[in-house]
Figure 1: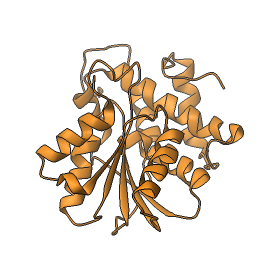
Figure 2: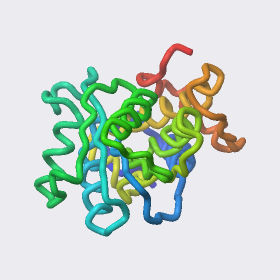
Figure 3: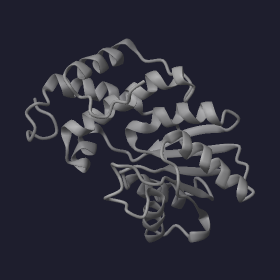
Figure 4: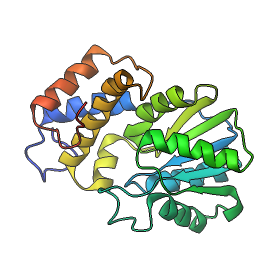
Length: 225
């Protein structure tokens, strides 16, 4: 058995097994239901905007905030900023301009939540329920962040419906995707200690998979705690 491609032989079958455990853990698998607003969290992944547009057209929310400025990993792809490019993509997919609010400055997930909340307040919107739309492997971290920073709202998460193999193919870099899975799990574990997020239980098998991928060198997306 092999991973999604044989391009990078350094990614072994055991690495894929560990990665799939972490991929599944990162996704909240919330049942979707109508929300007062949705927030599309900026990143390198235009699938966030595509998914947000689809959920808007499905009638799940009347108002959509796109949030995100630039980061070293997105500046080349989205030179006008993540939120701006997301909005342009959503408009092209049929979301009306009046249904989109723009937050063009956030540089991390905490700022995504805090600044989006400020944009909504400035527009006179005080939602009781929020749907967070993110990269698939960012669902749990975005949920934990929102629960910490905006505890009074009902938070649910959604992402593009891809399995790990499909996501790797969409990115085109196997090792990078595994690095990102490991990096997000590190943040899920460490950020509650720093006051950035609520704590999430990490099952023993997921933690073992994380430790194994760390030891194997999938570390380019780690932060210094």
